Length: 410
Ligand SMILES: *Cc1c(COP(=O)(O)O)cnc(C)c1O
Image 1 (cartoon, rainbow, N blue to C red):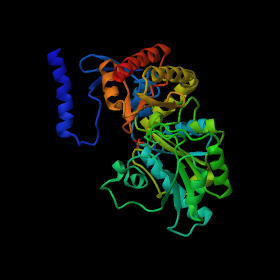
Image 2: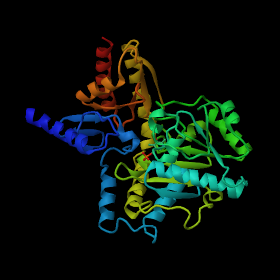
Image 3: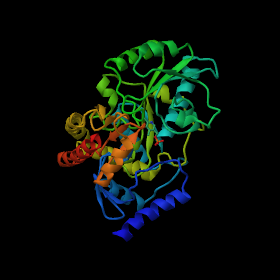
Image 4: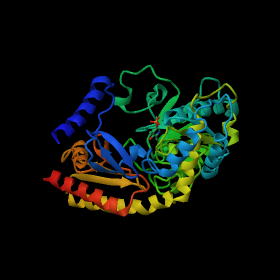
């Protein structure tokens, strides 16, 4: 036992000694994982209630996705977009079909797909809307999270993300999430797009007020402004529908997907829009060496098929309310420790009152008892298990959370 925990310390020590210090991980050293379970290097078992920030919606190492990857690895993995492949076309066709858009542009990470959206929106602004060159403005919400490139953090409102990284790309203006009046105040004749998350994930799982997205949709249409919906985290079943915009009864002009699109195996992202918007791109104007590679396309296509065949979206819609119910019970049992429980589908944040306890400490204590979660923004504990999660796992994980929360209450 002594020696085994020495192994944990050794691996953590190596990361600390040789890695950049840009993360503060929970002290668990993962060795392997399958579906909703994870094992560390000491052989201890954990229930994964985090799902790698929604990248692992299919469960870890889904056998069909592993098989699809292996099949493709017997053939070809990377071709670059200098040539065609026989996996990219079928993947894009399926993706457009499930999302309801005419075209999709594949990238790797979420941030790259957001950058793609920004480039597309600006060019559309100049070439279609007629905004004077160099003047296009994109409206973004306060509290947004769209990734970590320099352009993207430049329009973050979070000091931690920005401090010391300027100068930043101009052309972005802020509004308050959920507030139409603040959008109208921020907009001008050169506004080409509103870039927005349907639910603000990293901000602490913040839901919009009812009707906000309908009003925003109408306003965008009336003012010829593109509504760009960043569903890198919310999309592909997480909220109990294929896409979070369906809850709002709207259709955006463009959609950004990532995370779960890679089936928990690979980084795969995409920017989707109809031809009238997407066709501002021409050969040479945008690209990515690995974007849409044959292996990624094969895995992502199978990933979409698995979501459909295993009815994982419906499953999220069924399991979400159970998870919510149990977390609300924890809130009741934990006195003033929990000040809010909010979310949609299998994406729920438990907001800890810092006057009564520390989210980080609760997360670490849960990990010691075999449940993986993660704090976001200091106070919010995130529950976003793979969509394959079972009622038994939800019961067990929330029972452990409840014990930890009641103990912390004192
Ligand atoms: C995670 C995330 C991104 C960035 O994705 P990366 O793959 O980390 O670059 C962008 N937008 C949203 C809403 C996200 O949650």
